[in-house]
Image 1: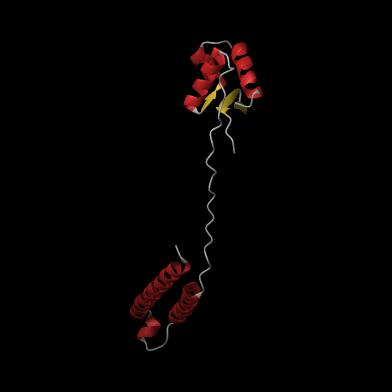
Image 2 (image 1 turned 120 degrees about the vertical axis):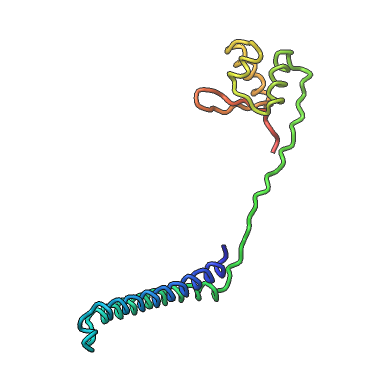
Length: 163
């Protein structure tokens, strides 16, 4: 919400609170006049003074609230600076697969299809052993084709992108 909207909301609540305080004040005085023996005798009941004091205190608090609302309404708006980070669209790295072994091409194809895979998934999908997958990934990483990132007890394998 903008400051002005919040200011109008606070001022509106303040006006509503003033009405509630006035109604409450009148009802309490009526109750006291009807129930206080001093008031019936023509004297001023001490409870009336307490109600007046509480009413003034309530008006002071509502007045402070209304002033805050007015300050928000009339304060100048700050300029909004919106900064959006535009991610560079990664350019796909042209990969020369002519000198890769069939197993390396197969692993690379699986990684490219998924964009990123866990090393354990590669073991499952290819049926190769852990050592064989590690060596294939070592060779592909050595050529700068893929990169591995440690995620807990596993590696996330992804095609390296040119930034």
